[in-house]
Length: 376
Image 1 (tube, rainbow, N blue to C red):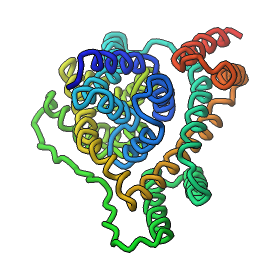
Image 2 (tube, helix red, strand yellow; image 1 turned 90 degrees about the vertical axis):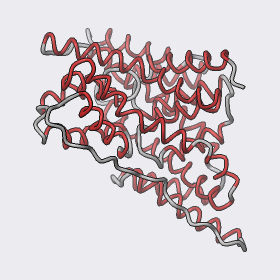
Image 3 (tube, helix red, strand yellow; image 1 turned 180 degrees about the horizontal axis):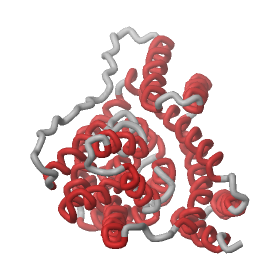
């Protein structure tokens, strides 16, 4: 029986995380690991890794789906929905206000200096999570080789989903052969990827907006940034939105905390007003709730199966390698300005030397420092 206390705890943790979760999926997962594994011990690091690996294999925003998994672990099905809703709400609310502001004034408020300082700060947060998760995932030298291969191919631009599934299959086959199992392994089938067909309406209504974003949410693989390519094809090519308007919507999603998919809220408002924003938000996130509801009970069963356990171990190290690849790319992009370097170094000091500083304070401090240094 789930207690009200547990649901309240889930709501508090993920609402707060949603308010400060800047920096993209890798940073979100790093903050999550600190909250639910290190501080609150809702699960051990191995299970957290298993959830990351499994989540990477289904459509939708990975970090948001990890939030839902964590909520489920703490407070069951109700916790799944409460965690997801509370994490998404701050980003959606802020993006909705920005959409109203944009409609009224034709431009977005200037917050670039605050966002500037967040990026170097989250580099240290991501590095800390990679170190902790990597230690747990690196179970043997063979696993290490698989991780190194995924890192190399990720840096070369190979699609992360292809890299993860390939690593899982390679690892499962290798370790199965090595263990000389007599029983015939069951085939490893990727999780279902379904596409929801839409019906053509005469005018652009809230229902049409809902179906459009529901389709995108159901087939969106990889990071949230892949969303922009989908939206360009779905909206710009159909003449519903101009490309400059899409770029402004992307900007709004970039400088709000939480999942970048909150961009859908902004676009929904542009297309069909307040109810359009509600329809777009529900449409883009609903598939993730359903995917996680289906997937969560399967993860422990995967771990118990020897073959699927090998598959999951290989996917886990691959997921850490992908995070490392993201960290490298973010570092190249972020540390080009001298002002970003002291923020990054100070963040590293606070996380690796001082250690007991909450990741959310690191983000807030980086934002303030970024704004102050903009005057230099």
